[in-house]
Amino acid sequence: DTPSNPFTAFSTRDWQAALIKILLIVIAVLLVLLVVLYIFGRKAEKKADSQRKTMEGQSQMMSFYVIDKKKMKLSEAGFPKIVVEQTPKYLRRAKVPILKVKVGPKVMSLMCDGTVFDSILPKQEVKAQVSGIYVMSAKRIRGPLPEPKKTRKQLKEEKKAAKLAEKAKAEKANAKSK
Image 1 (cartoon, one colour):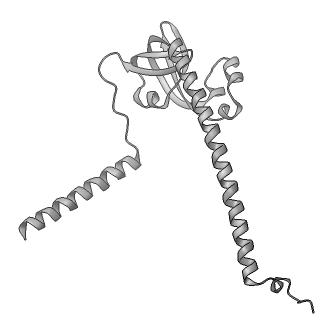
Image 2 (spheres, rainbow, N blue to C red):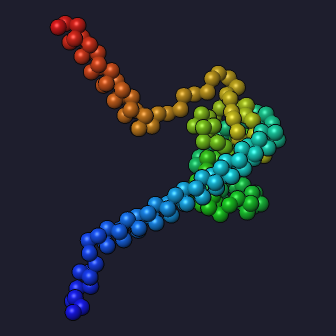
C-alpha cells in the first residue's frame, strides 16, 4: 500500500507548512547576518574615524609641484618596501591615486584621496595638507582649484534634467494659451 511516488505521501497542507518553515529559517538567517554586518560596520566606522583624527593631528602643510598623477598599484608606485609590506594584502593589488611631486630638489610619490586626485592637475604648484605620504587636502597656490571633469553618467543626468525642464516649460506655455 505504499505509494510509488514519494511526493504524493505528503498532502498539500504539509508542503505549505514545510515551505513556511523554510522561509522563516531563511529570513531569520538573513536578519542575523544583517545585524552582524551592522555591528562590524559600526566598529569599522569608529576605527576609521579615530585614524582620520590621528592623521589630521599629525598632518602638516607642504608646498610642492605636481609632476604627474596616475592610478597605479602600490608596488609600481615606487614607495619604500616597508610601506608596501604594511599595507593590507587586498589593497596591494588595488589601483590607488598616486601623485608624483617635487618637494624642493627631491622628487617623491605621494598617495592621495580620490577627491584630491580629481581636483589636482599635473604641472601646477599646490599647497597641501600631508600626513606622512598621504595627501589629505590640496589647494592651488595661484587661483582656485579647477573643475573636475564630468562623467558620462553626470552628463546624461544633466541632459535628462534639461529635457524635463523643457517639457515642463512647453506644458506651462500650452496651459497659458488655452
